[in-house]
Length: 116
Image (tube, rainbow, N blue to C red; front, side):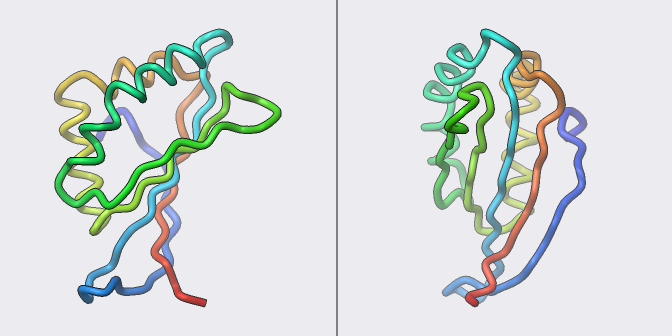
């Protein structure tokens, strides 16, 4: 997980199985002109993410007034599942090629649903 180093924010609620389900928000801006390439990359790689152990869902949101800025929202059985997934993406080189197309480091935040 050397490529992605950011602060985390946490809150907490247990899922139906009694464990903490973690929502991960990864926000990034593509380099100018690279947004389309990144979207194609995500379309290619996210099916594997959705079937990865511990993943509950993953969706990509594009900023309305700046289509090169996006948020990937994913839900995991735990932060540990996400960390294992990111280590796998780093080992396979997918993460490095993704980060190369970014304007700067992504922002990563971890949240647990509190049920308020």
